[in-house]
Image 1 (cartoon, helix red, strand yellow):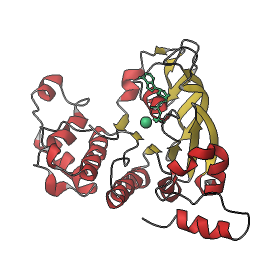
Image 2 (cartoon, rainbow, N blue to C red):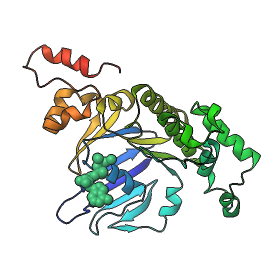
Image 3 (cartoon, rainbow, N blue to C red):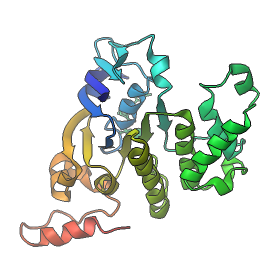
Image 4 (cartoon, rainbow, N blue to C red):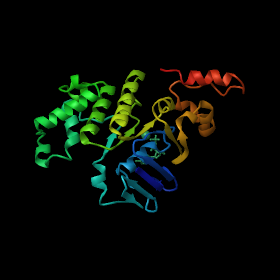
Length: 281
Ligand code: ADP
Ligand code: MG
């Protein structure tokens, strides 16, 4: 089953410059796909379109999610709201309401399922609270349930945001650079959590990553963008430093947690350098 089907998607924020330029791609159920690219390549813009948060140009193509057209030629479809209930979004930061407890934040994932009057008063049943606690347990931060969200570390906040997508019952998670502001250890925990939800619940995941090291470690498939275009869509193992240098030229070093050395002379040095670029951090 196709979870995401995009054809000919284009978006210009300003005249003459396309932030997305004729993007077409499909993602199947159960995939965990990395979206990579230097800053400004269009990753966030693409994710926001899939989430239905941005409208494409008037002649800007079509997006289907779970077989429903959610937007076409710059118009958001009527059915988009319903589809959006199945999409969980995790941003780089500002994911949670900082003054609310972690548990309440996770419970807000259920707002689409409980009567509005209860939701607006934050009145949740015991069963709903148990469900949210189970989600927190799954992401490994149930011990922090009663803390204010702002008192959690960045990585814990991201895991809480993932727990919220679990209580939401999301079938597609869009994560926009969820580890960009985290240290390596926290980054691993967040990526492991996404991977578990993907594997155990068969939730489709599209995760944008600034650095390709994580894409290679966690995602079989990677989609690389440059200047709003998809310039590579294939196995993430193909994303060697050399390949990326060909794709991105001078910007390629930006894509590694550990920047590769400048282009070496051809020969066995290349192998040594490759190991270095992917050394676990
Ligand atoms: P990435 O997430 O890969 O860093 P973005 O999707 O944020 O890239 O940006 C792609 C391009 O679109 C950039 O040139 C950026 O300046 C531009 N852009 C993104 N959002 C806006 C906006 N709200 N208004 C104007 N330009 C934007
Ligand atoms: Mg971005």
